[in-house]
Image 1 (tube, rainbow, N blue to C red):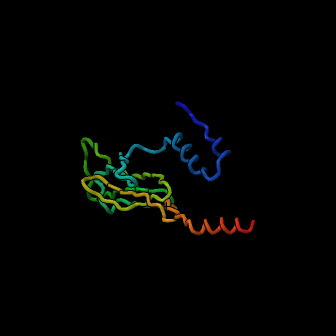
Image 2: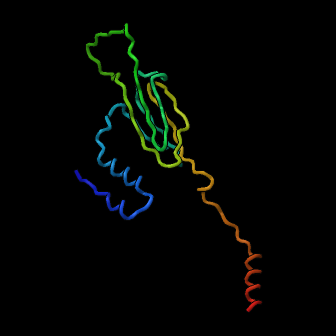
Image 3: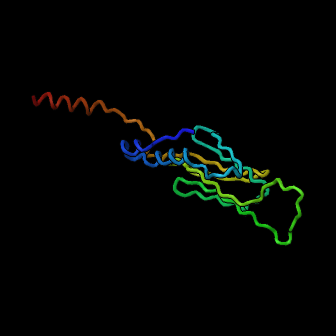
Length: 154
C-alpha cells in the first residue's frame, strides 16, 4: 500500500490545513468499522443523500447530530429485559454504532427519514449571499466624466 506525505502542503499553503488534515486522515484511517453499511449519493447540483441500512432500529434509538462540519449518526438499540431469545443463528446485527462524516463548508442537514430499515439523511450545500458571484454594472457616464476632468487639467 502506498503512503503519501502531505507535509509539503502544510509548508506552502495558508488556510488549507483542514483539507490537508482530511486527506491525511482519509489515507490512514482504518478505524471506521463496516457496520452499518451506507451509501452517499449526489441527488442534485448541490444536494446529497446518505442512506444507511439500520434494520431493527426505531426512530427513538437513532441520534443525528450536526456540529461544525461533522455529522454524527449514533444508534443505541435498547434490549427488552424480558425478551431473552435463544437464537439458532443470529445474522441480523443488533449492536450499537456511531458513524461520523466530515462535511464541507456550508453543507447543512436538511432532513432525515427512516423507512423500510433505511435511514435517509438529506444534505445541501448553500452558499451565503456574500459568497455567491455577483455582476458589477459598468457606469459609462462616470468613467467619461473622470477622463474629461483629467484631460482638461492637463
